[in-house]
Image (cartoon, rainbow, N blue to C red; front, side):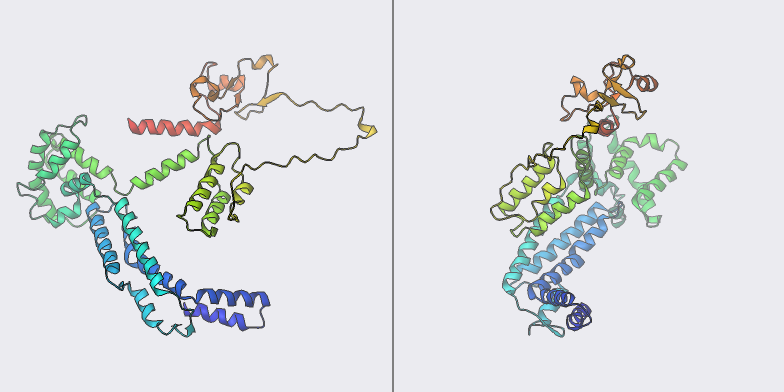
Length: 443
């Protein structure tokens, strides 16, 4: 913004500010009025406004159409290819205006430091090439989603509502889908063909008379409408309704999210520390402050060592140790950090305290149920106290077996037997509740 440069210029020449403030304002203004910086800023602005912004906005809606999204992505990919296929490249509106207005090395009223435009253009072309590869990798064409959308996607059906009742409509798509789910329990892949032929005609009539609405609301209203006319509708068309349920439940935008949630659950188990805000800040600083290219071998090596240090049980993933990676030298080699063995200053004994014996440490562990009871090995009342079940041989796969104990009184109140393998302390229960949820989902 031109206003920002005006403010910085006023601060740098205003003697009411301190010399430090004037120097900082002058340096910031100098850094911003560089051709390479302004060129890249305008390039990414066009990239967001013309390509990434519209795609992100569509994907934020849980009820978007798969075919519409794939069509939108194909359009954006064609746009990006047209930007870079010509020589010189034809950029977006914002960058094109900047290139035209800065030919005399002026940005508005301010003189800018010229840069190598050919090098900058090549960097932008390389960035678009990587973006196209990422789009191809993330949005792979799914034949199952294509065929399900032909059968049940509301937008596609509305566009083809004049041909939905035709005999050939949807047959190829149905053949692909029913072959895919032929082993699904209670699904008859032969009967579903007749059901599709019978449901197409009333579906086409309903499409012509219904108002535009979301797909879930549309199918709900259609099924309720048919059930009022035919009480046996759900039974007569149970196979086609199974496929409809699969389509409605399999949201297109949840695959990456589920992977993210699964990774977060793995990080937040007892075997690994939670990713704290301080640690995240350090890892981001590592990525931002390294002078090497982020894709270079050395940078990848440092990043891997940083993660191993954070994930290693022995190093405890301490903030100060990870912080060492921020200002890393060129000849940096990761080493195990150890505390210096500095002998503490000996305290001169006082004659007044010589006769007082030291208190012995309590050889006991507090109950994990937080009842306040101390469990000692020589306490006859705690003979039947039990440990967290990670000490059982069955759970040897856990890296760090928990040493928490449940006192005999709490064990009786909770109804836990002495030979139980299912009692876990609060620190460990999350791990197994996540397992039970995953087992339930598999079923």
